[in-house]
Image (tube, rainbow, N blue to C red; front, top):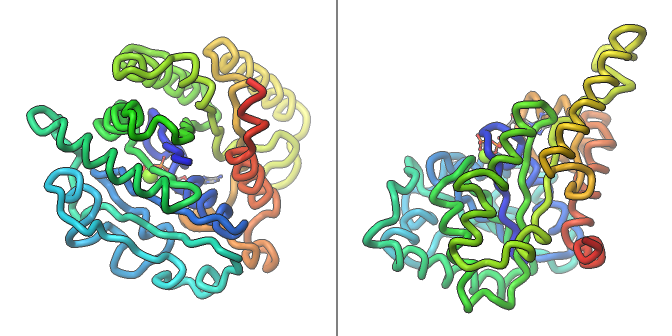
Length: 308
Ligand SMILES: Nc1ncnc2c1ncn2[C@@H]1O[C@H](COP(=O)(O)OP(=O)(O)OP(=O)(O)O)[C@@H](O)[C@H]1O
Ligand SMILES: [Mg+2]
């Protein structure tokens, strides 16, 4: 399975949530590849706490591979390379967790023009190989209507990947601006759906394989400092209802939702993988780990995806 993580806005929680999903897939025994397709800001190494790879690798990263075909493409065994002992020691029956980092000082593609076919071809080759080697390949794209997005759409339209299960996750915060932006990314001009149709995907099938993830959603019944009461509680309930109505009107309501994550103080302070030990030590909230577990379970639950 190939999973593309995208968002319209930056800073939505796309990378942190995707890393946590990748970790939980691996802890559940699956082999997982994590591809940093955020070419302009390849910081996945930092999330997995891999010293020296926090901002990508000096050579043979994904950008070099796609633009010049430099091989073999760099790969980092996350459990062997992480500086975080508890992540090194996760139990996993069979699961590998491998990072395919971007290039240090990498740049967004300027526009894939003359070289387009070659870049798309390399992307197809890589994704097809990783789809065979791993149970799940998670691809973290850049925010917005990026060339990484175009590349993903074009590569997955290829007959070489026609038998692969491909899913899209669109991340957004639980605010008016983010709801409109996420909906626009999918349904708007030059959006994902238009791009999918342009590159030969079936629109209906494409949408059936796309879900939204709401990140850092504040809880109504409990603030960081205590419990909401009176006018404040009433206002928040009203705003939440208004956001739900807005999301439904913009086609990103409950029926197209994969799930949501609560506001997590650990993640507000530090981008990282939330481990069971963080919860056991009462550093991270159990609700956050449960939310990541639910997202992970749903992502690979065929019945869940077939009910739509
Ligand atoms: N559930 C959460 N609660 C609190 N903070 C969160 C939560 N999820 C993510 N964050 C924080 O939000 C910030 C942005 O997250 P992240 O870097 O994953 O977003 P992104 O969409 O990948 O951003 P970019 O577009 O810059 O790549 C980070 O500091 C992250 O730790
Ligand atoms: Mg990111």
